[in-house]
Length: 96
Image (cartoon, rainbow, N blue to C red):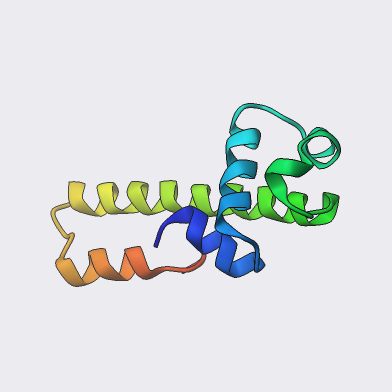
């Protein structure tokens, strides 16, 4: 599932607004700046919603990075099977 779509569904926000906020965060804008000066881009999200989005974005990106690291490590041992690869891709949390 696409990261933007996953965040939008999880937070109950419009995918366009989520995508705009992700771009603003990636450009280095702060939550207070986005909340105050970029209302046209994020709809009606308040500071709390923006911070939740930013935190989940970071978590999901870290999860995706970790999935890649685990798959590479297992593949390096020659033990990566299709079933194991699917299980790693399906993991919803870092602990899984």
